[in-house]
Image (cartoon, rainbow, N blue to C red; front, side, top):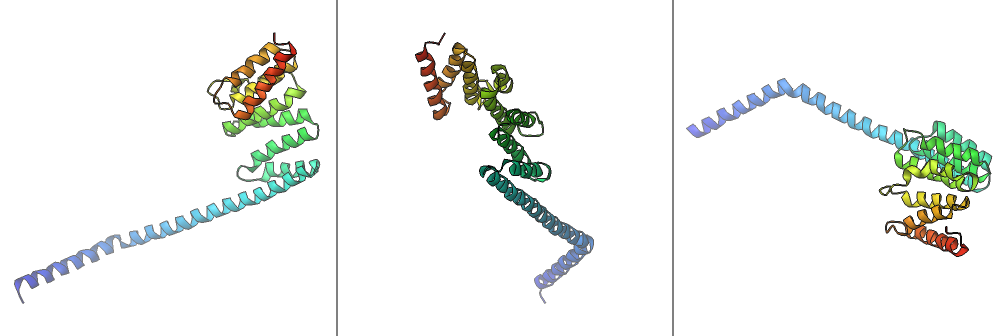
Length: 221
């Protein structure tokens, strides 16, 4: 046997001994880590499936409540939505609260509808974007069933140049002001919307039409 062959055999024996020593020392730990990874992955997948299943079930219940509302079965729809508010999952409890307020408005309970929207807008646990939409919905009801002060209380906070909902807020403020005979104030809000290039086209078209109506009526002062 040559010296090179002997050295290779010795090196191989050393490597095997080192590998056995490493396995004896760290093998059980590696197995434990592998088991934890498998169990953790299974738990994560199982939890996601559980959450998704509950959310899907709530989605089906919400769709059923919408069908009841669309069919004119307001009381049944409200009961279904109330059940979702307390027992729903995902985003559906909040959606149920908003829809319930809409159903109340549809059946003529405007004070109940506004109260429902106000509850959502005042709930700090709900994302700001949804709370702001609830403010707009309450103000929309109050344009016809409240005062300018009522509308302003809800949406004046949205009347900032950097707020993405400023156009709708200004439209509602203008409508409410016009309803109370404050034509100059209404024009101010409408012109703000008209001059804002970021305003949606349909909103700008509506306020431009309202501006023409006010000016044409001779009550622009």
